Amino acid sequence: MIAFTFDILILGEIFAIATIVSGRFLKRRQRYWFSFVKACILCLFTPLGTILGVFTIIVLSRQSVKELYGLPNADPAN
Image (cartoon, rainbow, N blue to C red; front, side, top):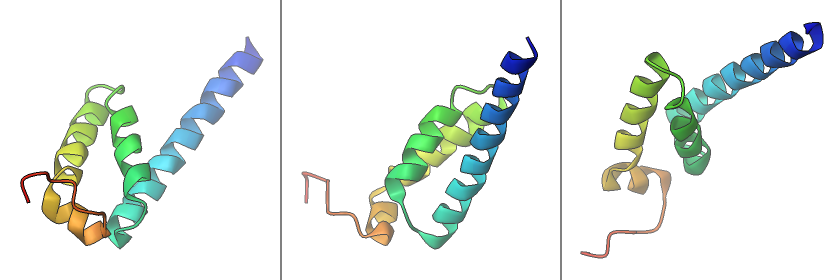
C-alpha cells in the first residue's frame, strides 16, 4: 500500500513538473507538439486541468500561433 501511494505521488510530481516545463516552452515558443499533447492530457484532470487544457488547445490550434512556432502551413484553403 505504501509503495502504491509513493508511486502515485511520484507520478503526480512528474506530471506537475511536465506542466511547468510545457508553460516555459509556450513562453519561448518551442516544442509545439509537447505542449499540445500535454494540454490534451491536462483535460483529464477536472475542473482546473480541463479548463487549462481546452484553452491551450484552442490557442495552439490557431494558424497565427502555428506560424509563430514555424510550423508548415497546414491550412488547405491557402
